[in-house]
Length: 303
Image (cartoon, helix red, strand yellow):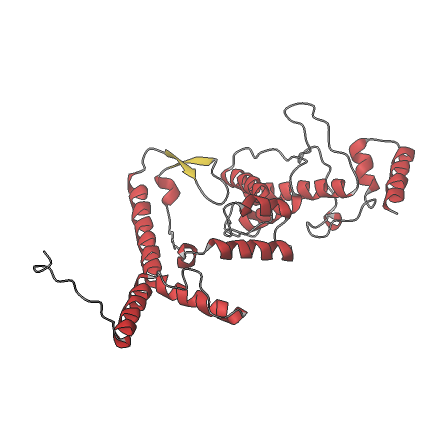
């Protein structure tokens, strides 16, 4: 065996060969996208260096992401054309997204009448490292974009998208109310726990600022907006939450008295505590002396 098999002595490789292998490896990593930047290795610590590295990573994934977004857009248009042609019998579809996975409705061909356009934004499909998403959440919390409750909800999976509201639960319920008003179905009752500012903002964006809706729908949304403003004034005035007396407990548009147009409070500028004694007196039905005593007690606690 020693005569048949001769061991090969070790030899060294020149530097030119090593550099060629390193360049080939780098070229393959840049082509596949699995390079040093995607693994989190950033050259430099300044903000411009981080932004440049992020842009370099996006350029690698840009062709594939743009092609995928265009494919989704084309397929969605084909699907909508098929539904407009073949949905003679209404079909119940669940609307997933926008924080409303529990919303469902019956869809038929009449819902696809007229012109429609669909677009998939490529930036929403761009991969984002979890460390960068956590950094965005920390930055939003420090700047006050979200509160600590919303931060806890998003922190586990570093959800850094759809940041349109400081509270997703309140916006989800507000959108259900807006959809019910738009479709002419009974809207969910107004509750004391509702965030009036978020509900009013959704009503303005979805209905009140639209010019192509039926006047009856706009009037119903305006009535709901006014009731929310009255409830916000009642909260700012130190009023107690209503007692649960049955299924219809809680303030509603019929139980809250309306104010004059010049006295309606805005969602972002409600009056301070103790400014609306007449509204509290009308809501509670208390004598004038008792109302004055309550106001004095509230002002004493504030001072």
